[in-house]
Length: 130
Image (cartoon, rainbow, N blue to C red; front, side, top):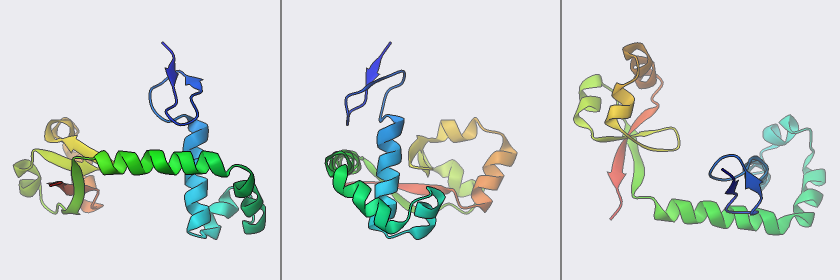
């Protein structure tokens, strides 16, 4: 089955934002934040990237609007870090990575993996938006 990217409308094998739009967004964020380290990783200097942005500005604005819309529609926001396993077990939904995950997803992982996530402070409380 073919899916369409919600930003550039190109066909792809999977649902969601296509690779090119996602990379464009991350590059654009680096440009906005003047993050030279990321631009160095992309083998671009700031002046070259400024020219690139002038040429492709509409796609960056579309990507930015799409991610802003996703952020606005979220039901939960990220809270403080969860420190102990007991606190984790009291939760129904936990923030992991870029979004909320049900506790069953976390508890299906190996105990050692969960312990390492707690040590690295990757698990956070989910606060319901009002």
